[in-house]
Length: 236
Image (tube, rainbow, N blue to C red; front, side):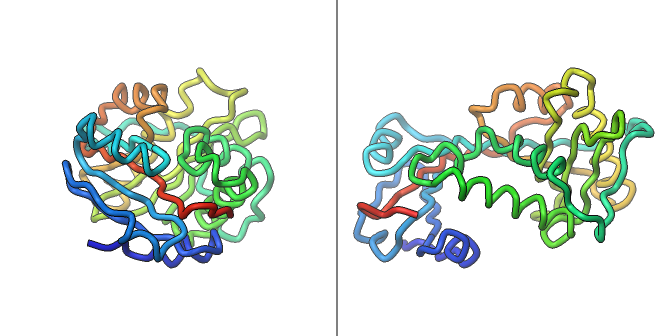
């Protein structure tokens, strides 16, 4: 059992990054990690208190990652304020900032070994590559008072429609904009792509997002615990 090197992450962070999926109850030796500078250790399903303490002692506990899923049934009118971002349209600061806000609970933001500027660069890259359709198939935005009030990115992942980023500007929160964007995502998934299931990943620490998705009819399908193992004295 050895980590798999992640090429994109290695290039982005300019160090050797790997990922290792660990079974429930398994422990590992640092010897299998030392060829890497950073390894994402991912434990699927449940984790015992003893296993959690074991990995906390050797790595940074970065995320309790939840995959939510919903079977699309009734489609709801999406409204008139939602538009598809044109692929050739210039990406402005407004779009970047709203996208950045979605990373408040990201493991790449809370890990103290990752500089803030790398988190900003990561989410900026995510937004740009979504708007240009490099990693997303669609980006919808909600416009109000000639401002971008919210956005949602969509792609196909594991043969399911997948929500990537969902974010609403704090000025416009409480106006059910997120719900309308999710309705649009469901319409896109079922009517335009032919999928009956849609999924989204969020962090358990983001309790507001969890409550929102559950209110929208999503249920938890998978739970993963993510630790960041760093080589001693490694800095980005």
